[in-house]
Image 1 (cartoon, rainbow, N blue to C red):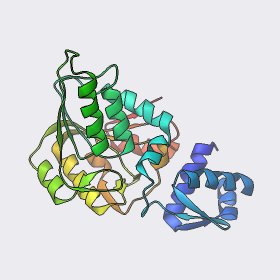
Image 2 (cartoon, rainbow, N blue to C red):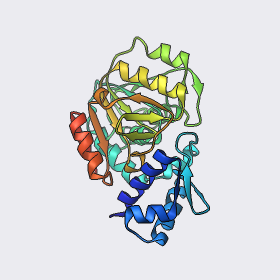
Image 3 (cartoon, rainbow, N blue to C red):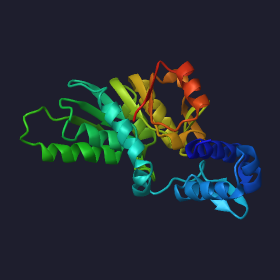
Length: 263
């Protein structure tokens, strides 16, 4: 079993049980206790669980790592997702971005050297909006039509999202061609987040979009936040990267119209 597969299975067990023990995981995964301890150390460093004496406990449903720290996690995978996601956009599109580091990375790709102009951007993410505002300054005399950015109001979360009644009201009557939506966790039932207000605003984003594109790296699979905000039946396309367990890919391919594994 590959390390990425072990990590996904460990996270699944932590979410299902709350607390897991090293020797139980070693028997389940058919590896040594030393290998399990190394895996737990890596997952603890990523903020995906808390190491405790003899095992680990869940941190996924209540804690969100600092935003800057999250941007550095799984950077290569997020870059691959962003490159593939940017190919879905064309001049004249209206596109929404949810909060989250993967969506921020897509915004960086879209506003980079091969940027897509003439977009209408709707977002509740302060970092996403900043990327487009900075792009306008960089390319002020570049000739291409600059994106129009509509930023929702609302209460700021630890992930730099604007959420709550103001954000929901701003989104209620909007209609966009495409939505890129990230998640704190993904699993059999769909996408989740630890923030109840963010879940409600994410649902408003989903309702506003003709095409919903879920973007997440392999570490999110098996992580369960407090509140679900999108079932797979509400998602049109998933863009992820190598590392998802085969059973996860099989479930997604049965549940959504298109699954793209970016590399």
